[in-house]
Amino acid sequence: MGADGQGHLRLLDSHREALVATDVAFGMACVVSLVLATFTWWTGASTIAAPLAILGFLTSNVVLSQVSLRVEKANTIEIARAVLGAVIVPGSYILVDGPLAPWWLGAMINSLGGAIVLGLVTKRPFWGRLLAIYYIALVTLAVWVSSPAPDGYGHAVVALGLAMVGFLFAEIMSLLGQAMAKEHLRSRELAAVRDALFAEMEVAQQIQTLLLPTTPKMESMEIACCMETADEVGGDYYDVLEVDGRRFIAIGDVSGHGVTSGLTMMMARTSLVAALQANSRISLAELYCTLNRCMSQNLARMDRQLYMTFALLEYAGDGRFEGVGRHLPFLIHRFATGEIEEVELDGAWLGIMDGLQPSMLPLREIQLEAGDTLLGYTDGVIEHEGPEGMFGLDGLRSLLAERAPAGPFGVIEAVLEHLRELSPTREDDVTMLSLRLTERCLSRAESVASPLPRGPEGLA
Image (cartoon, rainbow, N blue to C red; front, side):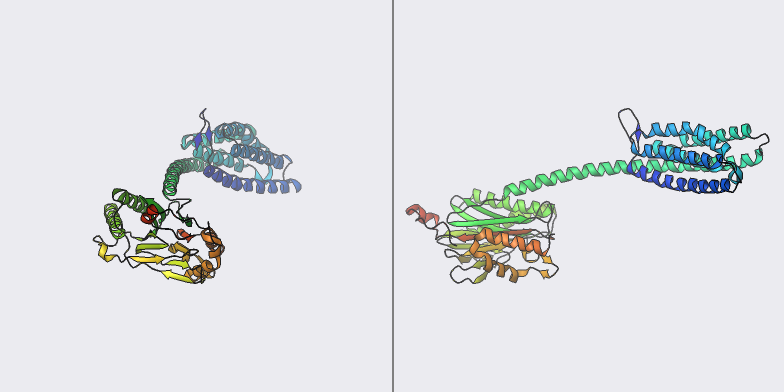
């Protein structure tokens, strides 16, 4: 239940459902009475006044119920119903004759209906009890006015039973109204917390998106990348960095997905950039060990048992990359032969070993020729599952062989389209980074000594 600026009470959806159920039950009772009254009139056991009185009673209550359910000022309508009951309750009681007389059902329906409504709306039994007493008094007055010799004992017994039922319903409905109001308040509080959480998640997603390059560029290379998260914030990572002339590409995947994995991914990226900015001449293996140390310390403080697969490649010039770490194998499409090669790094995951040393990280060289395409990916790509099974590494190899001539953008678009065809939903983050060497690019030291020769912009 809520209130507008003037203090008028409004029915909540839960109140409306309860009132609809009440109207249906009482309405069916009135319909049965109307059928019986019509039959008794047809057979001559009563006058036409009986069915007409019940019909008027039923019509007036239906109209008021429908209005009460459709307007915000529910208390005003229920007050009008109580006032109108001063006419329709004793009127129907007096007019219904024959086998249905005395028609106590009309008094009971209005009394219980009023107790139910007022109990739900006010959350107090007082007004429902008062209304029950009010209707009993009206009917009692009608009995003594309309009948020269009323059965006082029988009337008292029925009135007492009606009062007990009305009091009971007033108490039960007031408790139900309190419970519904508390539930509504909790729902609003939960909705506010949910909206605040979603807003914070959107901020986290925006921060994560801003940290990752959307249109990465590197001299003499075509580069395309994508990350589609299973949740609002993902645990996958890719990057293309250039710090003091050194050029790096990276791809990784934090165990699990969601907020914690997303924060861990952002910590890894921040640690990588900070380490390079602190010492731009640090070796690739030492850089990886520094990154591992920062990750391990942060995860220990967070008390999280997480790890991160991570592959870090540095471009050494002349089509040659040097890599450390451990991640899923890179796939390379050779332009000259059309073959697909797998290149795997033999290092260690981040966050697994506190005392990781450079000697534990064998350096792996990857040589690309002009036109060759390299593809890095996370397990969300190859483990994406549809009705016919997982996409798999073999499926990715086949698609790379087919789409490599279209360039990195064409490869990634083709993979994403195929994954959507397999299944529109994702259980894990999907991340890819692809590059194609468009010409043999010299190292930084060599390019300083002699201008870099210009080659073709790309190969078909």
